Each structure stands twice: as C-alpha cells, then as structure tokens.
Amino acid sequence: MGDSNSKDGKNSNLKGIGGILLTSVAVPIADKVIEKIADKIDERSIEETITVPMLYTRIHLTLEQAVKSVEAVGLKAIPVEIHIQQANIKYKDCFENQVVASEPKQNKKVRPGTGVRLIFVTKEVIAESQKLFDETQRTKIEVKERTRENLSVAAKRTKQGVTKIFKRNNKEKIIGEDMPNE
Image: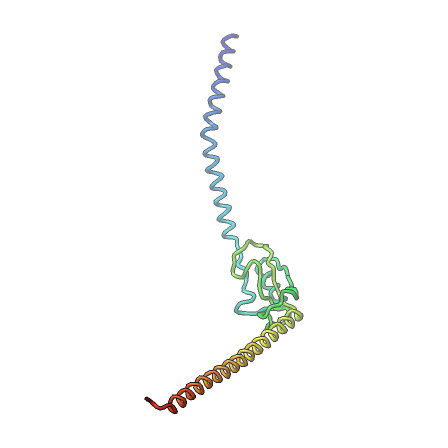
C-alpha cells in the first residue's frame, strides 16, 4: 500500500508540474488567440461602417428629405431645431426646415444604427437672422456716414488751418516789404 501511496504522490506532483507548464504555455497562446479575435472584430467593425450622407453642403435638404436619406442608409435620424437665441446672419437665406448641420458630420463613417442629429432652422430663426442682418447693414451705413462726416469736418479744419498759415505768411511778407532795407 505504501507503494501505491508513493505512486499517487508522484502523480499528484506530476499533475502540479504539468499544470504549471500548461499554464505557462497556454496563457501566451490564449493571449495571442484573444488578440487575433479582437483584430477580426475590429476589422469587421471597420468594414461594417456607413457614411453619413450629404445633407447640407452642396445640396440643401428639408428636414423630411434628410430624415429619409439618413434612415435609407441604416442610421437613426434625430431632428434638432435651432433655437431663436442661436439666430445667425448665415441663416438669413435658408428656407423653412432646412438642414444646416449634422452630428456626426456628413461623409463621416459610423456604425449602422448610429443616431445622426439633424440640425435645422425654423421660419422664426430665419426671420430673426434677417433682422440681425438688416441691423448689421444699418450699422455699417451709419458708420460710413459718420466717417464721411468726420473726414469732412477734418478736411474743413485742415483747410482753415492752412488758410490761416497762408494769411499769416502773407502778412509777414507784406510787413517785411513795407520796411525799407537799411
């Protein structure tokens, strides 16, 4: 029986050594397998991308057209209205519900099903943008008029100053001519 115990003891020692060897060999192999799987997943996810369609640069789409375009390629459309506080001169020539931007931007590659924020203008924003433009134009005209007036006043003052200098010089010459040279 002692012999059988010694055999079991040797076997258990061999199992322990084998386990250590197996672990030291298996872990690096497992790491390599995991890396290869991760690379394949990355390659697959890169291959499975969709380009956000053109929505606002060369062509100008309404919100409805943009939603259809985005959903047709497998993305999710999320309409976002520009608030009146965000009115800007650049929106003055837009039409109602025109898409002016998106997030992510057009032509960017994204995964299927990604949400695309479609940023659009309302008629109120367009009207406020036109008001801002008109105010800017009025201000420019007023600045030009003030500049002209200031230049005109400066020119008159300069002319008056030059005239005084000439008169003074002429008086000195006249006074100098009246005096005889001795």
